[in-house]
Image 1 (cartoon, rainbow, N blue to C red):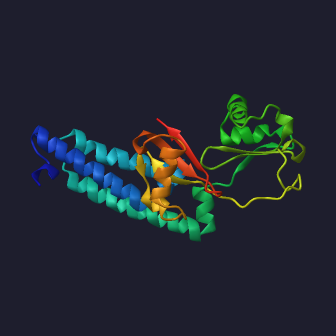
Image 2 (cartoon, rainbow, N blue to C red):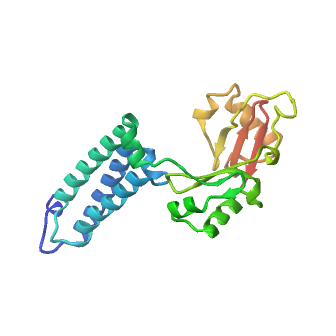
Length: 233
């Protein structure tokens, strides 16, 4: 375990061991912090990402620095991060400090220039985000909000929204997410067990209906009507 401590010089193998330990320690730290830390970064998440990366980078590039202090520091910071997340859930004032309320950029088809300056974004950036949402005309927008994670949420006026089944008074069908039965030439038995079909039926469908072997299937899904959809390599 000498590679964890400061050395006058490290062998190539010791550098490799440091990299492996740092890699898995970062994975563990990220797992503890949860999915939020790897989604679009908010203030607390961004501060943690910059700090952790900076702390672990030094012992990975300087043999004169030990890893023990960096790992202890990272563990403390992860603990403080979890406390910060907990406080943001329980303490509204702290939540508003960490995740400020969204800022209205467009309201009733009018750009709010003061809020553009407050969010520190340009009109060009706003127009770019509207184009990503397939919105051609600003006057069609009922509300556009600058979210704490740096994204823009847009809501069209009702007359420009796409009609739903409820609007057309059509009988709705229950939502069903297709089950992935085969992925990259291998059967997903966990998903298969959640359906009413068997492995024999699945392989028979591949050979008789699609005339393909299992290894040739990139993806195969089944819908609520037990209809198999096969995608080949």
